[in-house]
Length: 430
Ligand SMILES: *Cc1c(COP(=O)(O)O)cnc(C)c1O
Image (cartoon, rainbow, N blue to C red; front, side, top):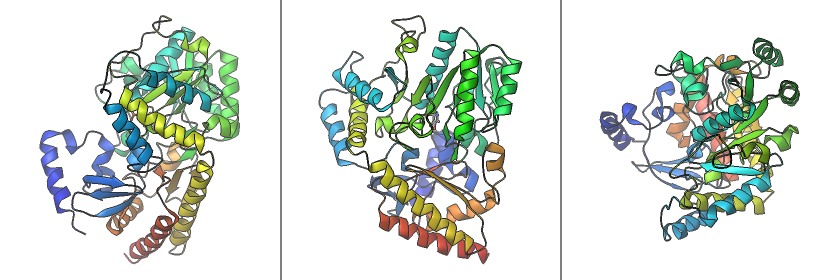
């Protein structure tokens, strides 16, 4: 397999763009390879600029639940483009998408659209602080909530990959209100509530996808809900990744725990840049122009992005079986890979939530970030490189979640398992 054009393109990009990429995790740093440059996508595949074809388990890091170039999303975007790219004034598409989004979740009455997950979470935190009149926030080690200052503390994924849990350029003053607790450990949360009487909100990925896939225990989320209620603290579910990915109606439908504020992104834009945050009316009415909490965006609710999101979500709405089918397929994938690994004496921990799958090369079960970090990174790097060479594109960090789409066929899953067999064998034989 030649990746000559990608290598050349990467060199050129590095001269003009820091690290050659516009988001750090794309740089393949943690697996030590050179990123491939993508020419096009088609269904469950991507094709690089050298013409190599790969089964895509990244799916743009989540958004493309119907795969590349889904016909109805593509058509909706092209139609919207013909009416104009942006107006900065209300359009019907925003209300249509809002109605659809709200219909999926019991916990939200109103929603506001932004252009990224980062923006959604940043705004949700401001709203929680404005609503409660408190300053402190509590987050969990290994959960990623975008790259805004106050949340860039022990933030998993890209940050963990680079060993910089917090970043230079973030003044200590900006994170002094950010308390940290350990995922799936309620005692560590109780301790934070003892330390501070001023916690505006607890923010959590109820199905964490940024330290690999590590779902929160139901009992943990129930206890978290109770602690928040007892302390007048809002509970924020950051479902930018898991929303419309782990289940159609959010983690709340899986675990029976409702958040006060919900943040969404990725799938909600069908591949276009969209984020959103929603809550019950009482909370959302605090937002400007109805209330005093300011939040705004020139391209928020962009009509082309709204059209893509509407096409994606209405397809999900019409086809409620889709998540069960995806879950079956993802389960087959990880159990097949695990079997292959085991047959060469390699231990693998696996998990699946809807169309999300995760695996760790670890002897022990993974319940939090420290567990995830104890996985075999060198083995992961070999697995990643081997699978890439075979034509299977996995996320280039052990701290990422894998995704399948409706275009990821059973045949592709079987091909992947067969390739993993070959790769594990090669790894075992050194
Ligand atoms: C991806 C992600 C974000 C950030 O979204 P961007 O669109 O990359 O800004 C926030 N929270 C979670 C849980 C995410 O997975």
